[in-house]
Image 1 (cartoon, rainbow, N blue to C red):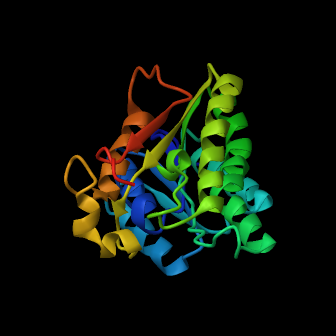
Image 2: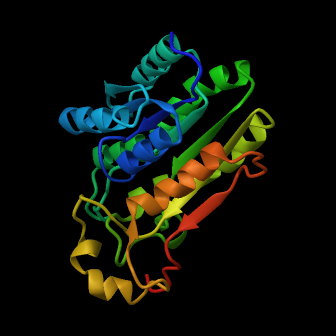
Length: 249
């Protein structure tokens, strides 16, 4: 068992926003349990985090599995002694329209984008409460507000799942307070190493963003780290939009 430093679990940690958040939390001194299906990329991110002077452990897992989430949480507690912060970042696009999507595709979109949050929160919260409290952040999307149909990477199933995160966050803020502060972050167009239609149309997209640029994974990571580390913290049940004020959607 390793004690002393605070401990965070990050899902969807192999690349993109999850990778940036893991690295930023490592810089803030957190030991890390990193979760993703992409084994090679997960190993690389784990190594980069450890180069910052903390201990990081990677778990290859499907975040849709409730049982696997329980195993990872218990393994994290066994190794590090506690869990102080949970970042639910795992997500997957769902570009199919209502006329084209199959039931299996819809169920998969909900499982990856919404049920995964339930899986990790339900297993993590008892440990946080037992140890005096903790913080949780779930990554939603600007699509939770806009519906994300016309110019979004994903359509209604993704938007529905991400909107579900906001309802879950508000309800659990009431259930888990005062021990746990839980918030959501709604990124707009974020440029990562993962190509999307938005980044392919960068100049056109930037015209509809007040700050005149696409967001970066680090833009989101800094907000995540703030919510994880701010003392005191009087924010819970909130949805923070990180989009440079994207007004042309």
